[in-house]
Image (cartoon, rainbow, N blue to C red; front, top):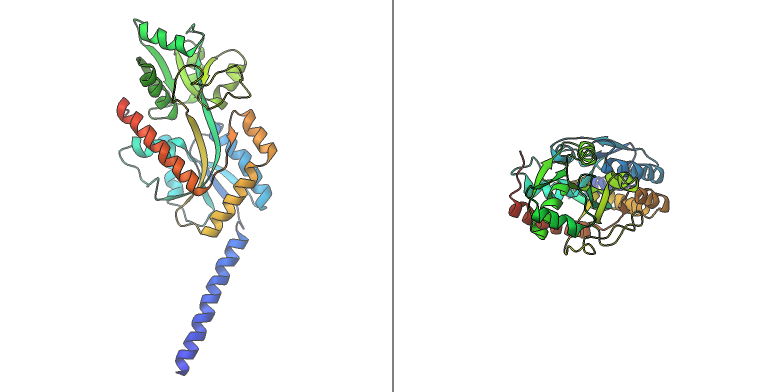
Length: 326
């Protein structure tokens, strides 16, 4: 019996030690720099907003949050790197509509499971698209664009930032809704697509607002509609798609914070609260607005529901338009 008593005491001490270590870990987190992996190039919309958020995290949590760009395969390379990283909270992903709502139904296979290998923490921002035309196309409204597309002896062309991107699928959705044909021209970079739009090589494009805002404000591109529920305070003269005559066309690209599966609940909770504080900061909100984005927080269940709804929506568009990746 004495050995059982000794073992019981040892077990109690061991369990207490484990519990204490776990609590200490959660209280000490983060005790070294945290990587925010952006699976797209530096200087793009996701990257710019993430760097603003990283500054707030660093200030709030008294530890460096460093942005790391892991580019390639439509965001799959960076996502895969985070999925396979150590689940300790020191490597996080800034996911997008593309990486977690579109790619899982667009690519035949992925090296990770977008649903099972990540813990959605919260949205960061929502970014609408602008339907823009260059100097080549002399129309004043979305309805005029659709009419020209229907009666033209040649097909209009529209640009995207690659097969299966939200810009591409928005164009396919408009073709379905407007019942017209147009030729899709995929580009490797947003910069080149906008350049060719300005150079009259392309007729129209759906462009994330941060990328097109300056050109529209300067009068170099004309915005026919915005894909959000409401008009933007930055471009109050631009109607929503509904106001421009196209129903059921609210399309927003979202960016959100995710952790690899296995990160502790206490760490996830800490990051969720830190995100809520950061996104409620007026300075950050103003910075996002100037970039054409809206700071937007949500909870894990809300985020999961949003991803599922977007995945179902884009799966239908991909199937109907027969979209394929190379």
